[in-house]
Amino acid sequence: MTASTAAIVVIGAEVLSAKVVDENGPFLLATLRARGIDTRETRTIGDDVEVIGRTVSELAASHTYVFTTGGVGPTHDDVTIAGIAKAFDVDVVQDPTLKGLIEQYYKDRLAPPHLKMAEVPRGATVNVPKGLGFVPVIRMRNVYVLPGVPALVKRCWASFEEELTRDVFFAGVLYFNVPESKIADIMTTAQRAYPAVAIGSYPRFDDGPYLVKVTFDGRNEAEVDAARSHVLAGVDTSWLVNGAP
Amino acid sequence: MTASTAAIVVIGAEVLSAKVVDENGPFLLATLRARGIDTRETRTIGDDVEVIGRTVSELAASHTYVFTTGGVGPTHDDVTIAGIAKAFDVDVVQDPTLKGLIEQYYKDRLAPPHLKMAEVPRGATVNVPKGLGFVPVIRMRNVYVLPGVPALVKRCWASFEEELTRDVFFAGVLYFNVPESKIADIMTTAQRAYPAVAIGSYPRFDDGPYLVKVTFDGRNEAEVDAARSHVLAGVDTSWLVNGAP
Image 1 (cartoon, chains in turn purple, green):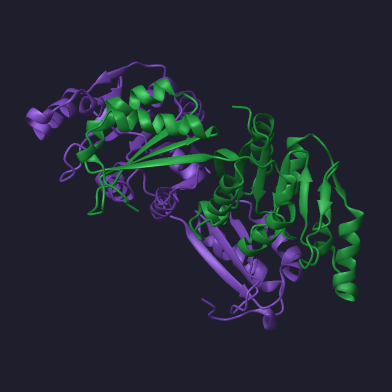
Image 2 (cartoon, helix red, strand yellow):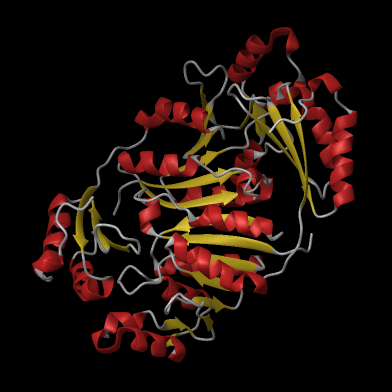
């Protein structure tokens, strides 16, 4: 499959130490999915320049897009910019546009920590979404550097979404009232017959309206339909739950 | 710091494709934290033997513990066991205890897919928590292999928690009614003076009762207190919010 892939890097000790539950990863997963971009991996890592550098370097080399969240403020534990610079082996430099916006915002209250927020990896492009003061989306090659505050991430996303490729996933689904083991073999043969369709099997163990949900995801609608039909042809119709949620 | 570290690997296309929001990562982060184990990284990856193998191999070599969730059922998309075996370059073999429990459970309904759930990497230890039928916790060296269903993960955790090291984090906190930039310098000097204490700075941008929460985490209570006192001594008392949540 040559369609775009993505990786998400959530940066923040507050997530790893369970002080907050990350919302940015799920948001980006859902929005990337809606845009037809295939996220292959998410990682949550700490505020550590070396770890950020290694992680971003590896993921940027293997995916169309990388999105980082967090670690872009004015304090000692905001080291994402330094980490991204390390990933691409470039310096950290002051961006004149950001510097100007920050000076304009703080006026005579301006202090050195504010100007830390004007720093970018050399070669990055800076885009300040309207209405967000000086909160930038910094793009370093294929890496989008986003803030950590979920409301800001959403507003930043809206500002650059149209730069990204757009593709489409076709999805099919079947619900069963029998356990996975009953349909395992037919799913295996369907998966072999349609390798470009991702067939997923999700049992539930509560008192829900079905026992197993089977999903069919792919880039080609006819293939997705064919894989679903392949499974359908191999099961007893009494095993199916129609119209399950 | 020589205390135990952990990494979490969430395995499942359903999370990456935003069909479900992962609950197991946040659960494990919180429980590991409560036990004093320092989680350094979480990753979410797809149901892919090669990717699981590479990921687990890398993380098992660099952390005291690795916890995987998901991908252990009877269907074609359950490939976690094969991935773990690949990580340690061993075969997949049938565990006689699990085989016996599965045969006992299914009796004359037993079918080949059921026995897939008796497979383990060669050399793994198998522990079946009481009351969970044949749902095992499979441990391969320092890697704990857990199911994907959150309710099962919680019950499995309770069954092996006492095998893990226990340590303690000491935590301090300060709340401020001034922006981060005002306290950035004193936090930087405190962080330099107490490198073993993780000082975190978390601004909020809503109408909450404070502007910045500063956290102090460490293994040594006196050091945590000293780092907090260092910051406290460097700020104006009118900047502090007492008793903020």
